[in-house]
Amino acid sequence: MSVSSNSNEPKINIIPLMDVIFIFIFFLLMSVQFFEYFEIASSNPVTKNAQATPPDSKEQKQFKLQLGKEKVEFTQGVDEKVVETFGYDKEGLTRLKEFMRKIKSENPDENSMIIKPYKDIDFNHIVSVVDSVQQRMSAGKDAKGNAKMKLLFRNIAFETRE
Amino acid sequence: MSEHYQLSIYQKKYKKPVSSQDVDEVNLTSLLDVLIILLFFLLMSYNPSVLSIDPLKNVNPPFSESLEMGKEAIIIQVSSDKEVFLEKRKLGNLDSQRDEEALESVFKKEFELQKQKFLKKFGAKDEQHKSINFILDGNLKYEQMEKLMLIASKSGFDNYKFVVRSKSKD
Image 1 (cartoon, rainbow over the protein chains, first blue to last red):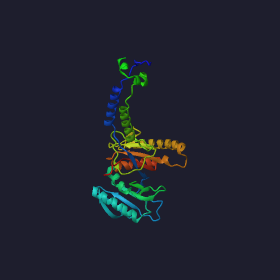
Image 2: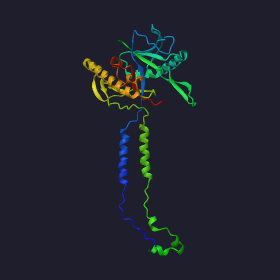
Image 3: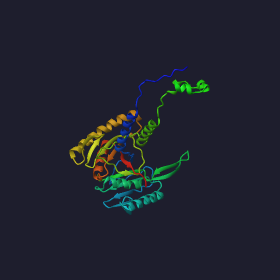
């Protein structure tokens, strides 16, 4: 005949522990901010008189984006001939993106862009223009068949006044 | 005992031992809920980049569509008040000429330290020791940004990385 063994061992009540954990998680949810950080790379700043020499282009195009107080001008060549003008508003930046794609399609070997902001332009505006310059474009497929992406103009440099 | 007498002979013969019936079972459902919530936090905070970004309270980097991962290098933060910080240690203010000179000497010192550190880690051929990460507040003017880049350039850095926040696409 089996003998029933009444268990007199102390039992841990985990319900209060679970309450503590849930309150802790609630505080974490309220305090944490989920931001992902990336970066924009730039090479050494160029001076006004120096000419940026893209290492991978045969002919020096000297593409430049001049960020003025109220507009962005795209210039080409050493004489900085203005080719097109854009605003900082959403429509202007959309046109700038399309224009960058067009310039890249006409000059596929050109990978550099000089950015010359006015001294009082804030960093937010500079980044919005750089986003247009460094859009991602399709670069074929890799060995596994996955789509490869690359930047329109990988090398950017800021022009300084010194 | 009365329960035992109510059972038939067959039931008494094949009844399971009482000791094996009195096992307390732990309800895992609630514990699994907690685990899933913790997993959710881990997944959301996961960052595949080797660079650990922790902006100061008054430094708000701009939003960008860039997806380039950060690489290991010294981190300089500049707030909207033009206060310059190295790894959360305040170095000075960009508006002060005296602080600018002090910044240059600090940058030179950090360049040498980074060079030694990266030579051991990556070897002589790698040029990563010339990189510097900037976490700039979005409201900072280009004049200050230019000043900072020139100081860094004089100190030996020639590869600048501007840290930005990811922008969710519409």
